[in-house]
Every structure is written in C-alpha cells, then in structure tokens.
Image (tube, rainbow, N blue to C red):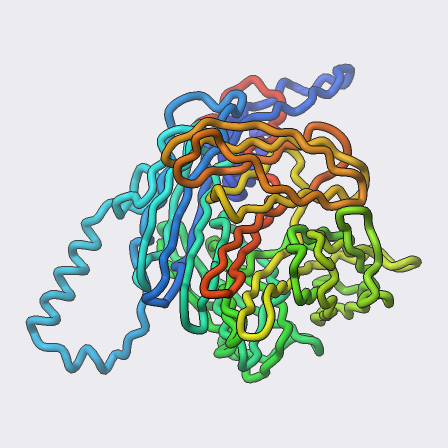
Length: 527
C-alpha cells in the first residue's frame, strides 16, 4: 500500500473520531502536469451525541429535544437518530454495605446484573437500552420529558441523512433549592480535549465535571485545574476511569484543597473519548451548565449577553507558553466600543486564569464580548467564557457563555419556544446576511424562513421567527449567505416566582459537511 493510500485512511479515521464518517476512495496516480482537484464536500454519515444526567433535584423537570436540519445535499435516505439511557449509571457505594445484605438481596442484585448484561447495546442500532428519543425524519424535532432526580445520562448516534447537523438540547427547570433555575445545554460530541474557563472551587459553588463515555471500552481521563497563580495542586485528578457507556460526575472541590472563585478546567483523555461539560451551582444565583470553550485562538467572540444583564464577568486562560495582553470590547446594537470597565488591557499570564468584572456593560441592549491582542500585543491563543447574572437581590439567576467559533456553513439549536426565545447574531468585522429557518414544531406547524442583515461590528438581537401553527417546540437553523463571519447564540428565558431564569446556548458550526479528496477506488468499507 503506497503512502497516498495510507494518508487517505488516516483522513477517514480522523473524520470518524471528530463527528462522523464519509466514504472516501484512493486517488489517481500522481500526474505532475495535472491541476489539483478541489476536495468534494460530502455529508457526514454518522454523528454521536452525549447528554449528562440533568439534575439531582426531585423538583427537576427536563425536556429533551432532538433535531436534524432538512435538505442536506447528498445525504441519501434511511438512517436513524436515537438517544438512549447510558447502560451503566454510577452510584456511590460503600463495600461494607454488601456485608449487610441478606442472601435474598444479593440474589436480586445478581439477577439485575444478569438482566443488564442481556440488554442490547446503547449506541445507535445496537442499543443496549430502549431509545428514549428516536428521530424519524430531518426537519421535524421530537421531544420527551423526564421528571425528578433519576433522569439518566443519554448516549446516542445518528446515521444516514439524520447525521449531518444532528443536535439535541437538554433543558431542565428546577423551581427551588440551591440548583434552582433554568439549566440548558446542547448535548456534546465526544472528544479527547476540553477547556472550561469560568469554573470554580469556591465554597459558594458546587461545580461538577460530567464525563460521559459512549463507547464499548473504558476511557481514562485527566482533570487539571488552573487558578490565578497557576496549577492548583491535586492528587486525585489524574487517571479517572470512565466505564463503557457510563457517566461519571466529578466534584471539582474534591480534587484540590485550594478554594478559588475563577478556575480553568482542562479535561483530556489518556485512552478513549468522552463528552465533557461542567454543571455549576451557586448559593444565591442558582445554576446552569458551562460548555467547553472554542479552541484556543488569539481572538474570540462570546455572543448572547442579555440586554438586562446586571453582572458580567470575563474569565480567560492562556494555555500556551506565551502571556497574552488583550483588548476587551463590546459589540452592541450600534457598534463596537471599549467599555469603561475594560479601559486597560487584560493581562493573562501563561498557565494562569485571569478574570475581569465588566458589570452591567450591556446597558439595556444585548451584545457580545470580543477579545483580541491589545495594540502592539502578540497573537497569543486563549480560551474564554463569561459568567452572566440577571436580576437583583434574592431574585438572581446565573448562566454561562463560552467563546464560540463562527457559523461557517450552518448551525442549529433545538427547543425554542413560542415565548421567551431570543436569537443574537454578531458580525465582529464585516456586515453579513444570514438566513434563519424556524423548523416545523415537535407537535405540528409549518417551517418559516427569514433573512437578517447584521452590520459589521454590531450585534443584532431578535425574537426569532415562529413556525406557522406551532405546536410544541421547534429548532432554529442559522446559515450565512454573504458577507463576513457571524457568531450566534440563543437565550431561553422564563420568570418563576419573580426570578428571571434564563440559559444561553451558543451555535458553533455543525460540521455536517466534510472535505474529501477526489478519488476513484471506493474505500467505503472503512465504515
């Protein structure tokens, strides 16, 4: 086998690890006089998603919504998209408890284990558990609800025409207790490396990293913590086992004795892959999910800050060897400004977490934070996130916004409601024209399409279009049509007993299409 063929196999393997598969084939013999062919853009053939266990509160009510955009060219027919409970939910047990069990109890445990071993697999067509949500067709979402503290983590896969752009939303309402609030997250794709600036080990916070393994073999993960002075000492953050098709929550404060309000978490895997997300709960402001930041880059956009935000804190980490000196700006309705709270550049030392309190910087208009090298500063890659608070006094609610990349081709967010949804579109540089599609509803309704123009350097916040005759919830799909890059976010808001509950999900590109070199020999057997 020649080196070119080997390279193609490596490409196919890499595509499988990221988000899906595309059929590829061996290239023609090299012709030095020939013009290089443009790689074909093909839809992915398989996608994986992981949703962590939503809550430990008996008052929790969680809505799950699954959706794939319609009309992906070349996606074919058939396929499936299913989310099922992880096969091995974990509980904290004490070995001494086994000694207290009667023979009858032990017999029941053995039978339960036998029943679990006989159950079918949990991923796609080989599911070990009955699917909780099964998507039937692109363009129409499906939803399901779980109440209480026993809602499990979900794992799933989509194939065929349901794979390109497949997304799932997990939205939980908790009406009382420390975790009260509206907690939302887009279920994550598995990976091997995640950065979470904006976490905390402070005594007023309870932050858990949820690690979910979708595969048939165990994964091993490392969790490293970084505070304002660098690495936080930890004896238990390395070599964390995550059993096959299981979800493991890890309380950050148990990994270190150092209590810090602003911490950056790095999750990496030694073997296997996981989905990772942080659940953060605060004593006075409820809780929400903190998703991973976009890949480290010299510039970042954090879209979706509500106009009525009463407190915004920026948390930044420089994972490389160089320090960063950053200019912090606000892209609002009328243009981009440097807020008074960010008049001086933000200095971020290599390997250390820096934070900046920006106050109520939006002043009634939704916006996005932009960060980049200060004048004369070097291009230093950073990761970043925002902690955002709405409300005052005892009626406050918190949410988190990670840095997110631009929507290059398409991005989708599910579980939008007729009331309480806000879509924000930020064009940090040039003006952009964007098509927004409101899908059919999960219970009925017809698709609606609307086009928006976002001026360069501004943020446009709109009440998104609602499907005609909507029943249930629906999905929003954003597709840039012309102009410069666009960053997007969706906020959900619900007022409960005077508390302005809300959650914000960013819309990174769905990577539903991949570039594959032009080839002849079919290697689709790699699937």
